Length: 251
Ligand code: SAH
Image 1: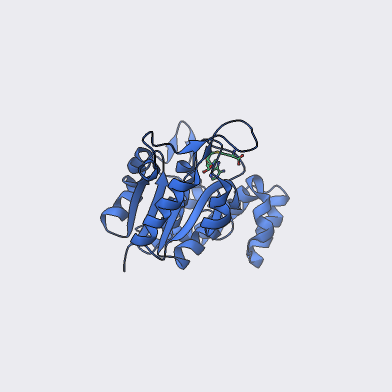
Image 2: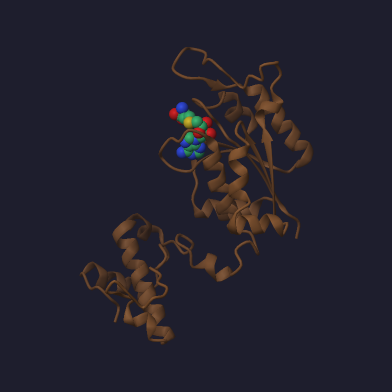
């Protein structure tokens, strides 16, 4: 299968490289499952000072990224990858989540992420250039690079063969609408804290029920909002009733 192509537009290209060459993403790059190209927006500026920002019309604090370098960089990307889906990273975008990650992974073969800086990006970019504007959450960070890496990472994990064991993706938090169950590794006892007996039992069905109970319990405690949308079985509902009554384990 051909490589999923990422084009990232940024004023800070050096930020991207270490992350995409580490761990699971690093292997995906090496195996050719994903291709990551980083474009320095500074290379698309048109004056000798390589100016990428300017004062906002109408006044106000801070600087705004000029449209020209971004439009020119997207022209270049469209020569390299005509089908690329152009996305602006912005706190004013549609919220990004696991469902959106899966949709992008299935629906595209190339995605371009525009990373803003300063007070943000000239509005003509979001109004006329991009296919989509995406936010990674309801907070403001200093630049779009981290946000772009979040999207690149989450979407790449959904591509076939990127995460070695597919089961690992399908049991991740959010994949089935709830959080993942707590996990333990050796030693069996650490500073008096014991791994729950149930998962040492070797009894697969009991372990499955125990882990499901714990996943529901964690979701109930930390993210009750997810339970309204999650697809829950009758068994789940019954476990939830017990969790609401304060029962600690499924046993
Ligand atoms: N003044 C802007 C925020 C600018 S932050 C506002 O209030 O909307 C600078 C850049 O960081 C943005 O252009 C965007 O690319 C990135 N950024 C900041 N927070 C983000 C978020 N939650 N999601 C995605 N990108 C974000």
